[in-house]
Image 1 (cartoon, each protein chain N blue to C red):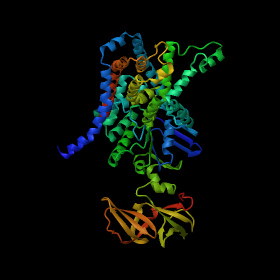
Image 2: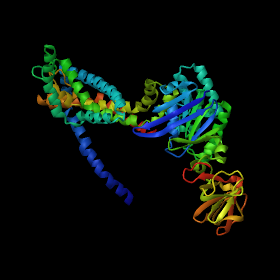
Image 3: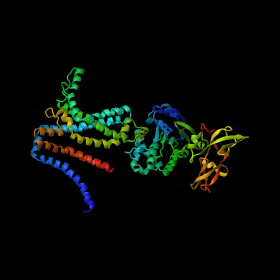
Length: 353
Length: 275
């Protein structure tokens, strides 16, 4: 087990810089998810930690040892690839024991460790099979087995669930999480799926265009997104964002939008007359007696709740209502959030006020 | 007969005709020409024949295997994606793409002991006379093998490059994270994926090399003193001596060499097909 440190890490391919100075400290035993849209540099960052890409500038350290110039094979890490990258000519047993065999471990030790990993991952029945004889989920488990047999300092996962169907993905998500709770190995996990990030991470680093936009615990990111990018990226359905003007008078504060006003909490930041972006999570919008006027256009019952799409003066808002809703398409409604659930962002910089 | 069957028959006839005219008839005619037992007796008594069989075996076993080891190594170099390597690979393919007769003749001129380029350079650098490349039987056969390797190496390198490109990059990355050195990556990732292709190509190349007339005949003409013939060139020698029956007999006696290779090859291919 180990801690991992990125210090002002940069990466260029030719003249194009794709990581612009990333710093991130990961504690021993922590599960950190790097999440962001494709092309944000999250996989490159992971591959640099794995030693599969060179570091252009900056430092990567595992524990106190700078590993910039250390070969992958000497970093004592294990990686699970999106394509699984199992060795097609080896059985499941041989695949899982390969790294130990390369380290000239004794046969008995290899057998014991492979056996234990197989038991954890429920693979005992498949040890003599070849990868081509396994289903996608089983291959995924073998790839994880190959990683845990090693008992490495750090686990790296590069979009490991992207090739699985939705149901299996949810199941494997829970398995990986359970595995981490059992082994407590420092883990860096890359995904573009914010639900995966939210459900699995101790801390999430949201990345965009070669930078970390925000680093924090999942619910902290959800409750207090640092900027518009994080606000839009984290949460499903996504946060509603509207242009508005901030007003304050006599200690009260509110935002004005499309002829309506939404009250803000007493300590709300910002100056009177400031142009802002207002963000409200779908579950924090209420249908009530006053607020922003709109027309219900879509009603999507999911059983546990109901998702409404409401058209308001050019903007389309999503509202999630707990339980059943009597609303029907065509209904005129008034929308307002609870004052504690309004997020304010600077209209030009996008930063949280 | 239903109309379906009539159609089937009609569609089959051209193939059967082609097979009869261009495969079965020539083969049977060849056997018929080579039917006289006396031709074989004379062939086996000819000291050139024994030497030729040995030459052929050496040629096929040594030249083809040397070629494949080099091709395997070079394919690892040419899968590199750097631009200058791309350009180099274009140059590298040239020997295979240019026609045999002028190139092999020019090698022959280069190896001329008195005025050839190779010995001129040796003389200029060392002041000594170079070897008699084409009049020493061992050297001459070695030179033929060299020409053969030079000429067909690019083709087989290309085939093995294709084989290497089919191996997903992640397997190498996984192996390197697992702790494999460069050699271990070759041993555990590259070779297992390439083994079938390598063996099948080697056998195919052996079959083709048994029929390689150019590398030997254009360079040495079978000489000196008929000591560098291979089975592919021996027939021509007999035809020049007006011994057609002998010539056909050399082809028939090369069957024990060719047929096992063909059989092995077909078996491999059909097994690969069912996997």
